[in-house]
Picture 1 (tube, rainbow, N blue to C red):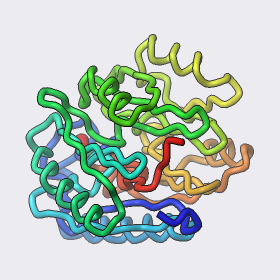
Picture 2: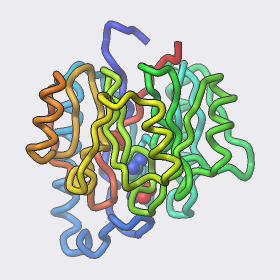
Picture 3: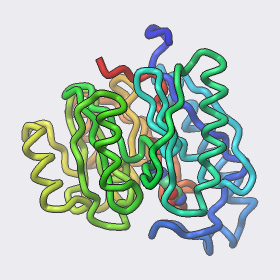
Length: 286
Ligand code: ARG
């Protein structure tokens, strides 16, 4: 990939998006069902606004087609982990999303055919792993932060470490509300970590504080977490996120970042925000 062209993101267009089942506590099929056409229109608008924000900030965007009856495909961060041109295909915990495995495999095979990926790797039997949603690359520390518990298996981090030949930090997710690491943990380009302490076990909190120096830790409030603002994408020094409260905008600005707010309410109805609507394709581990 051409480094000069900026970070590259895979997104999945939302024409098959809906909220029709509940596999996390944020999902609201009842609210969706009150006005499916209206929500779908809003989802299209929110998606357009997200892609525009990523491009304005200097990112390049690759848009894959959605698949009927796989509404959560709009969250490609869960489709796999891509590092060094190699994609580790996800395996999903819940049957509602398992059909996405073949769909993302087809997307990755297509990227490979076009020379955008070198290899597609399959997880061993018995492991679940929900992609970059539970594996966040930290360029500053040259390691991956991996989440497990509600979705990804406790043994997934070791497989990730071995497959990509990288160091990992394992973080147990303590609650179903913060079921993927990306709902409660975000690494910024200056090495800051924005995180929601209540989402982690005691050991998880201790590991974060042992690894990241105190002045680089930014604690998210209940409100920031509930607005899905921790689920953010840093495109250079612009942070693209669901509309934040003033305090968080201020804190990030003081640290030299620009905040690009996107009204992502239709996707928050499924428990997702900006980060999980993207999958970074061009990360290098060294
Ligand atoms: N409804 C989806 C699920 O429960 C939302 C996924 C959001 N993805 C994320 N990485 N946070 O799986």
